[in-house]
Image 1 (cartoon, helix red, strand yellow):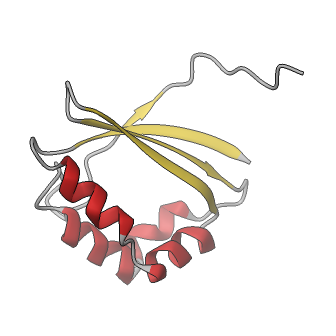
Image 2: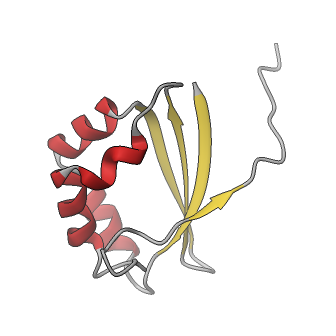
Image 3: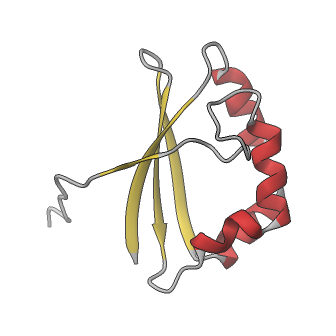
Length: 107
């Protein structure tokens, strides 16, 4: 398993709408993420900067690089494009975050 993190940008005033849409995430999208090897996915919000910080765990042999070709992923990006910064194809603008510290179990 591998953990990665990245940053996205939410448009000002869109936190509640972002949370509402994710509370109703499409089962087909969940299946696509799982089939691509995503095992855990968390998103955190910084209200001072409107940054979204995503952390996900994926299998070693993930196929996340193929997600942009999956119809439900593209539809989700289209659905989210009005509330966050995106590329022309509506993919969320993402900046990878570099790991600088990891604390394992304290036992």
